Length: 117
Image (cartoon, rainbow, N blue to C red):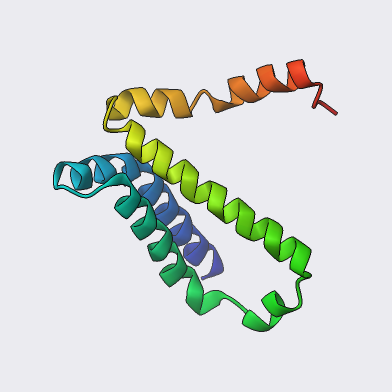
């Protein structure tokens, strides 16, 4: 039973990720701004995660770590906004091709900034 539940969560995640660019393009064609779509996407994630969040555990996390997490969330929101805005200017296929090259850019950046272990 546990493996079936895990498989369903995995399937839901793959479906959500693989359709996000297409759904974003459809919403943009229907007049929604990139900021509205990015905000809606983050709100949907909160609604999905809210029932499984343990608030008591979150309250025990040090403020500095919580601040870092909030900063990460802000950058995630900016990433969503920038990516969705890019879909106005290039096709979904081009956007997907650029996103999947991120390991190459990380390798190049780590070479120049000596971030390798």
